[in-house]
Image (tube, rainbow, N blue to C red; front, side):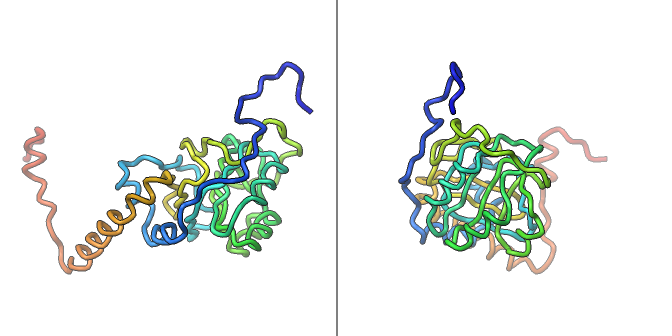
Length: 231
């Protein structure tokens, strides 16, 4: 029930059932590129705050964002019902470290429809079960205590623009996460830039493969030009 006199932002209470997704072939091409390399390509933009890390250090996540605003359970369940195989659930839970808003029961349902994983600006629970399941979870940490639901139910939303980990996420954006953290690439740039990213990555791999002995950085002249004195 809405609280009388309480203002609600226009995006709150909205459930958008249809979003434009990145073609799966493009998404799969990003899976072979590590997040730091993509972040460099985009001038360091799109990096979520470093507090959002993989629950399991070896996890990789790569898929199209379906967004869920707030920690409310029913709103999040609606978002999951709308997900398609390969989608990533992005939960904008406000960064709270006090209560969890995800667990292994929800992850099991998501895995049964081949969802890619979840990114939470907040906490999870059931970490042992999640690790055993191998379901990719990126979050701020774990706690046994979860929210009492409904939790601000009338102020949530699905597939609206959200902020997660300090980065704006639009439904349909590319989410790429690995041991370094989570990166957001807008849908259009993911499509237009993947060829260049792959080409640059191939060049880097070729350069590294050819490095069979130490190659000096040769930065002495640059440092001298910046005023450093060598003694």
